[in-house]
Length: 332
Image 1 (cartoon, rainbow, N blue to C red):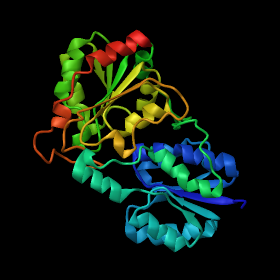
Image 2: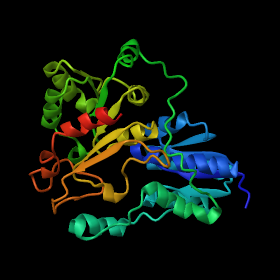
Image 3: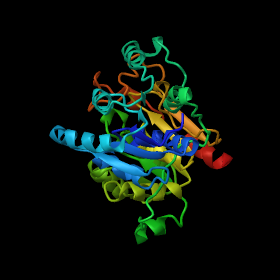
């Protein structure tokens, strides 16, 4: 079938939206259709610089306003809707638009079992991106193997201090996460910084600003931009870095989209859930560190404000990763 106009639905969040980028690219290039996306307003900027997207619709914060956006979407008369969120809300939109649609196997039941009985129940060894393309195969869309995309906005202009940093060699440390149980503890960063003379540039949101400033005061080889720059600013710093050290966060996926080497550190979640760094056919150095002998992890596919067991061993028992960093500089 020839598609004239297609809508992709993905409401949130940073990492999840970046992970949809191969679908956006391949659908656009392989169908030549006019391609629209529906997402939350606070994440629209992640799609705004994408050259494969023709129009962005922003989900209203108020459910009372949903009827207005649904009316606008109905006027577009889509040939196909691709639901990459597959929540009750996205299913509702698909139902109201009453057009042919495709979603994907979210394996929520399998994930629930996996997090309840831990590693005694194995999940399919398949990345979320590949599960997206399994569903799209029915309309002939194939994965081009080019990995994730992230497009820095053409209007982005880096401030002088960001430009100055990129003239030196440095490692990115990602402090933040949407869930505390996926964050690398401050003491782990201190242990790492004290063992290395390498320069570290820290990224995070407003809630990590204080931690970043404190670490910057303690270590002469640390500079923090946590809470002080935009997503595009973070992407700019990642783009010119040598290595990215991150928990299971949106910045980890952004680094993968920019084809950067990554040392990912896993707390309450696990790569087995299918959201590890994805490079497609590109061979990029990558290490994953997790405390594998804990029967209580993964305890959630997302995360918690605090460890349900109160001990947070999944992060507190992590090694310092000194050897990983040294090995990177030996082999790179």
